[in-house]
Amino acid sequence: MLSREQVLHVARLARLELTDEEIERMAAELSKVLDHMETIGELDLADVEPTSHVVAIENALRADEPRPCLPQDVALASAPDAASGGFRVPSPGPAPS
Image 1: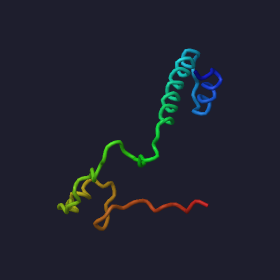
Image 2 (image 1 turned 90 degrees about the horizontal axis):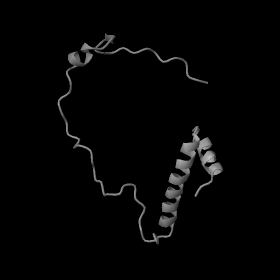
Image 3 (image 1 turned 60 degrees about the horizontal axis):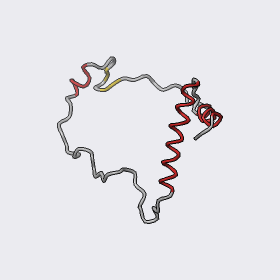
Image 4 (image 1 turned 180 degrees about the vertical axis):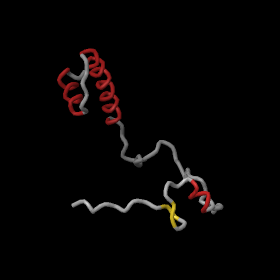
């Protein structure tokens, strides 16, 4: 099990303030996480390809099909400052140096 000092070190890195009760609880919980990591480390994963998802996901986005545009007058109807058929926006300030 993690020591009190180790938990406080992790809490300091995460910028957390923990009560004595939380320190004890975190010591147990973090120890369990590390035990699981150790178990995973014992597995032979040489032939397992790295994955970014636990299930195969293919193109979860909708089809990119043309659709009618929003009419210009409707789009500009709620613009706070429309001009020349477009949205007027403030000029950018000077570039940061």
